[in-house]
Amino acid sequence: MSAHLKWLSAASLKKNFDTKEVIAFILPTTYAYYDGLPKLIALSKGLIVSTSILVFLLLCLFKLYKNFRNNEKAVAEVLETGYFNNFFRPFATVVNDKLQSGSKFTFDFKNKTLPSIETGNVELKIILPESKDKMDNVIMAINDLAKDACVDNGSWVKVQAQDSGKVIIYECPRTLTTIEKHLINGEDEYTNEESIKFHRYFCEKFMKDYKTTQFNFSVSRVM
Image 1 (cartoon, one colour):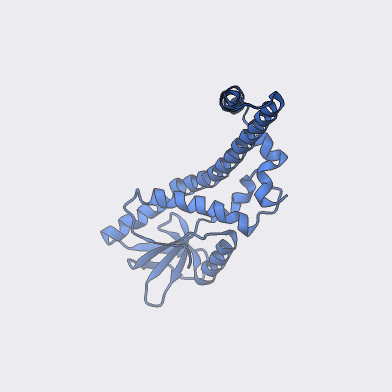
Image 2 (cartoon, rainbow, N blue to C red):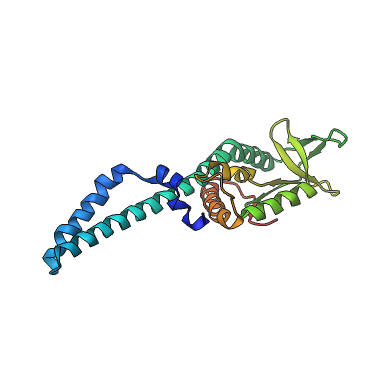
C-alpha cells in the first residue's frame, strides 16, 4: 500500500478507530446535520438520509486520519523524549559544566592502540538529519572522522582528535534509525520520503526541549 494510504490499512483501522469518538462526536454531529438540514432547505427524505450517511463516513475518515497522524507524531516525540532526557541532557550538562569551569576532559578510546587524551579544548557538534538517507550519510561521515571514546569514564561518544589538540564530539540521535520498528505498518518498507515527517517531528521536539536549556552548542541539520 502507498505510504499516503497507510492510514486506511487494516492495522491503522485497528489502532486508530475510536468507538468513543464515534459516540461522543461523530454520531451527534451527523444527527445534527440530519435534523437541521430539512429546516434550511427542502430535500427528499432519501437525499437527506444518503447525505447524512456520507457526512458520517467523512467524519469517520477525518478522525481516522487525524488519529493516524497524531500517533505517527507521538512515535517520533516519544523517541525524542527518551533520547533527550536519558542521554543528551545529562551528557550535554556535564560537557557544558566542564567547559564553563575550564576543567579538562579525559578521552579514553575504545581502540586501545590509541592513547588517551586530556584536554580542555573541546567542541560539541549536534547534527539532526532531516531524513533516513541523510541520517545514513551523517553517520557514515561521523564514522570516517571520529572514533569511539569514553568521556571521563562516563558516556561513549564519537570523538575527532585534531593535531592541534582540539577535540570535536559529534552527536547524532541514532535512535531515529529504530523508528520503523515502532510504526503501525512496520512490516512495510520504510522509505526515505516517509521518513522526512518523522525526522521533522523529532527535530521540532528536540529544538523545543533544547531551548529550555542554557546550552550553546552547535546544532545543524548537516555535517
